[in-house]
Image (cartoon, rainbow, N blue to C red; front, side, top):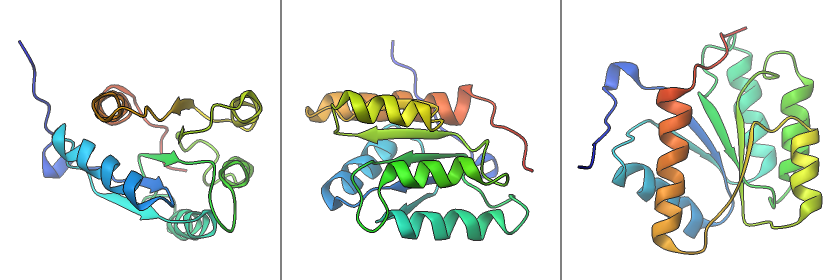
Length: 152
């Protein structure tokens, strides 16, 4: 028996997807829709844009911060590890959940992401169905199961 999950529009929290690859953006958005996770997803296509979006939101007292960030590591302008470091170094965003979602299989990236305070590190599956399942599990956990930190 398969369960279907859906979130009412009143309960929606948004997500920030930081990804420069258009195919991966579309695949991630499709995976959320397919799994009936209808939260608004804002997309930043480079690290600089992600930081601008986050710190603009944090300037509003934190009320507009996303529920969590899905962060790729290999980004133009400002790489994902630098984005993570800046998120953790600012008191307004320090507790924001950050899930690294990357194709990097490098141990150095894994180690550094956790040293900088990543909440989770997920390697993007190459297989379409595995990717859909991974995004489903991430969405269900971070949007439904997990209790986010209170706004600053």
